Image (cartoon, rainbow, N blue to C red; front, top):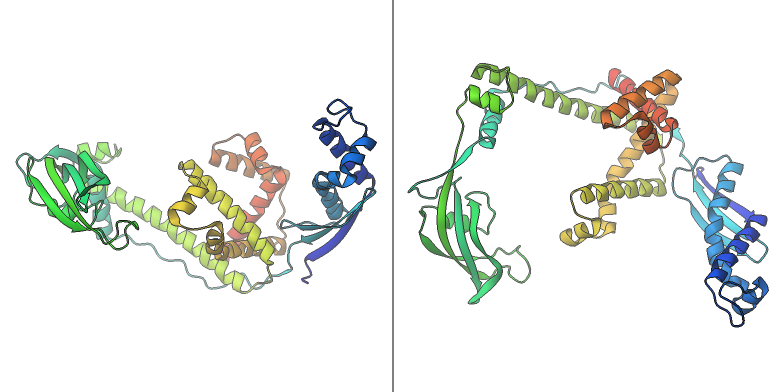
Length: 415
């Protein structure tokens, strides 16, 4: 057994009897025994009918937190993962819990300075600037009707269509005035290509085949689509002039040269931010290789569960719950757990690395510095300092965040 795994037995006597009494009162309120009003039966009568064992399960649930608190306080432990708990003894007079508590593993910090980690130099090419300007023009392009024009790549064909499989109309395979951008690959292969050259008012029958990776009941099947083009629209790119600059919100830009310079600075800023993130990752990776730590599986599992909860919250914000995700992707929680485990292990390892650096550098902060950090974080998240502390739980967590932040700065500055 690892040094940071602690097996502790806690015996409850008075607390157990109190839990049994509270459980009896709760259950008795919901119970009708012949000869007594509901909830009015004496305890001895209730126990004669149901036995004291009927109270054990609920009383155990009510007692676990009491016993756990006793276990960590009496043994001065700081758990870092959910404990394992077993009931090793139970009677009407006492209960014995056995907790398996995991504390922080021993960390031996290796060299974390002068690791010769290189930060990428940032350059911006003319092609990158042109590509970004072209992208902005596409974004602000006007869509206009293409009078008497044929459908070409990049146009939007407004179509009516009906699909048929085995001579029957395809369920869900019909649409009216559907705007289809040619080249978007929104439909099955061959559909969009088959419309090229058509004009508004023209009709065409497309003989196609569903791809092999399509839904089970249709993959590989022949399908006929009858299509009518109602309208053809094309994108008209804006000229690079002052109106274009204003539409972009660049009131200080007057010439194309100034626009290129502004775009260059924006791309450079983005690339520098990315280069900085990659540099930090390399520093962490290099320093972590010099560190010795044996991380318990339970600690990694706890981190994975936190990551899954965060992911579920992100999905919820997008209008999807985690069960919908599993159905759509054909996966289970175990699959997501397995996929996230390597990243979870890395996160835990880096956290222990930064804690080790903070200890080695004897990082300590005044109350004013911690308050300032809280102000900065509150401003960053757009909440009041009081709300921030409530979210984080205490100022101790803010102080911990500051320690990690400063430890990371030391790691970056010395490599």
